[in-house]
Image (cartoon, rainbow, N blue to C red):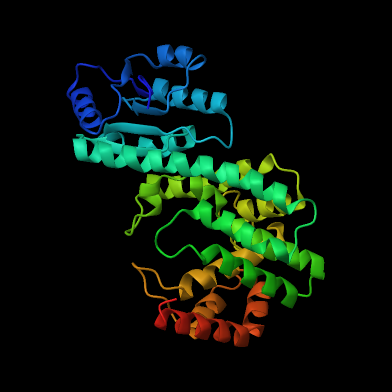
Length: 352
């Protein structure tokens, strides 16, 4: 990193927090940060120079700091990840949810320790690199697929979906499995073959926006605190914005899935709180496929359940979380699901 690629905003350079930040970055070989006590001065300089990383302290009330974050996000534009780590006293942690809406990438409560700073900084630098990689891979994949995506392109599309999730917990095949199952459900629902095929091809990109979520949050094994949950939910808008700039049929289909597969049949989902038939069909299909795959797949921190137990749980959620017609289609293909589960078990036993 070049000199001054780290900015620290709204924090006195002589404060204890600044000394801790300096010590942590210096010991890790990062450049000395540049300090801006006034967010307005940082914003004025931002127009001519883009740092690689910003740390901003949320004071009480953090009106100027949140305005600064919103402003730099509008300058950077959608589809670009600029790491912004917010810090602040634990009493302003509730404000962190508002800061997520403004555009922060993560929040670290004071008092700070060098270890925490490096952990959070490392998480966001890793996320920044992954986001750049996914943007390049998306352009390359869309170009390779062209105007008529087909089965021959499935592997490269699934690879893109896998890259977006950037998880070390076995999600490497999650995107592909969700895609295959979504296509099967679409066919079972009687959709035209071309439409069902496109849903199956686009479905692996359902969580593409996770490339823009802090790695620390993605890899957390316990429950999220409220602001972390909100950070995770930002992957929907991030993925939507990433795909908006593409005009191919694959990108258009994927964009619809990305922004709608976390909606619920009863209207209690996100981001728009859509309900029933107002939710695009492809989103309703992927919601069921993703839930089934997440339940049945073994993760280091979670044992997978049996196909029968997963189907029973999904059946219980019809008319609440899931479209009942999509659930019925899933139930009708359960023989294929049992066969798939058998192959997965044999592969694990063989170490594949």
